[in-house]
Length: 305
Image (tube, rainbow, N blue to C red; front, side):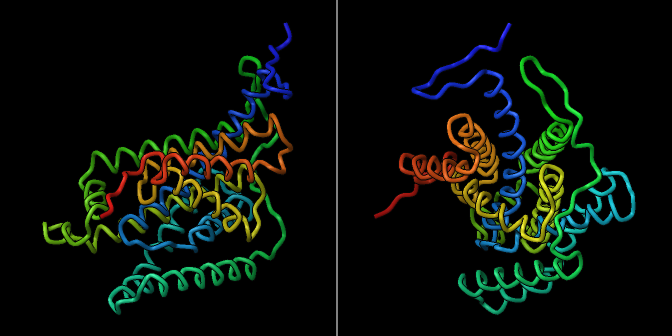
């Protein structure tokens, strides 16, 4: 029996198209969510908009490429290496750049410009090391499996499965562990958390390690799902910012919801318009959502006056 067709206005698509775009949306939304959670955590605690976050993701992809393709190691080893490498980068930038700048009383604009400069430095170092040639990880991009009236590729299973495990782990960390609860306390009030006896320096360090590790993982999954170029992370960064705003600025759980929602909306839109326009559709929905929920889907309303 042929898949059931659905008519919406003048647009007609089949249920298998809807299922396929849903799978695609969950996969791409998972990448947005992983990148958005790390960036949101840093912003929630330090009020730092880190424009280098996208290039952290790119570096994770290239570290995985070096281990997986250049050294011929299994993908799981490449993923672990990328997560560790970018987590270490997050720690190093905190120790050498962000903490000294905070001690000097750097303002929002100085920190913002510094993060943009760091982004350009990282991107050009990647370009110098690996050139601008598009690259792919050593994964099977042809295998797929039937699920009901649709099909899911091995790459989609890999991306969704790893992202889901990581997101559940982060959720448990933030809600069940002392470190996670301390991170949430700092995001509510840094000064109050410090007065209450929380070791804020250590928690900030852990935040950079976690944010960097998530960025590295997101970069590998993006490289698995698409192709690897020096501009990959920078291209994804706008969508990551959109996910953070949609979910609620500074709310890591909101970043998760916003990332998944953005990915699904963009992919669902391809049932009605050309895929070229899916980013524009996603941002149009973002604007409409913020008209009704200015603080984001999981953001809290603020009082004025």
